Length: 132
Image 1 (tube, helix red, strand yellow):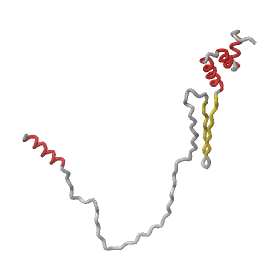
Image 2 (cartoon, rainbow, N blue to C red):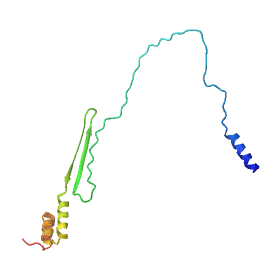
Image 3 (cartoon, rainbow, N blue to C red):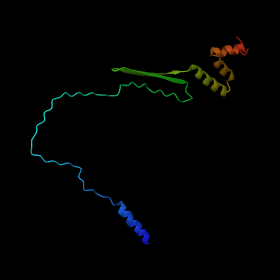
Image 4 (spheres, one colour):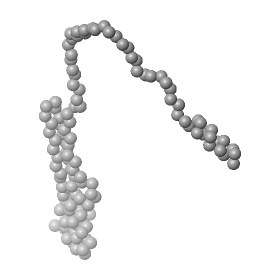
């Protein structure tokens, strides 16, 4: 029990802050008067961040959409212009519509819709699966 009190007492002695008597302020007393005259030129340079045109964000990250976004921006020291638009991928829409028709049991309509793409129609002709 005595050793615990000794440890507590030593801890208090070590943790007590010490204050120094040094004063950081320099004091001088003077009776003389002086006049200071300054002639000079002051130049100020203002540095600011460059102007920036920020193109709009067109969010087409949903995988079920058949659209994609295009955006761009141009900035000069005086004028900035930004614009953006979105485009629809018709072949993607055709494939989604054809899959929906096929899922509803309309297989002939689904094939007919896919054959609206000239490449698919030519492939079906080459395979002798479509007749004129």
